[in-house]
Image (tube, rainbow, N blue to C red):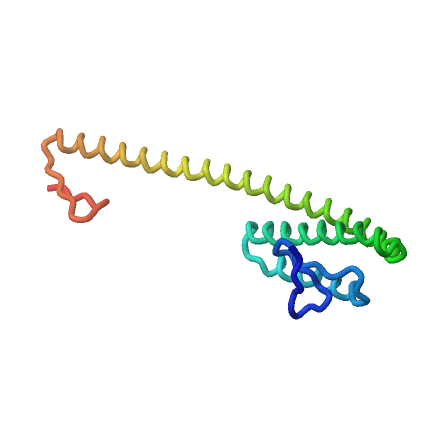
Length: 158
């Protein structure tokens, strides 16, 4: 369902993705503004998750825009021919964007595996320290030495 998007005359909002109207004489300016706005948002995004989310939204916009250009061939073939170069660039950029997203996903998986390994190593170290402390405590108590714990981790012997 297409609804006129307020604030951007000639823009169409479909499936929560705003796409400039390809028949508008300001199409080139609007699309350039969309790309600059997207690049700034990605640059300012703090997490990889947010960056991927923004990349996916922009990829949807590229697909919608390519669909609009294809639909335009039926109604205005001359304009569609002029925008054919734009459609080719959109396809190339879309493929590059999807490759970036795949790279980020692989990076996440590697990071998760690395963090999981580090956490397991730390947990194992803590368990080993605890076992060593228990063995020392049993050894000292077995020798007839009384152990009092004033604070956790502090051992006083009498």
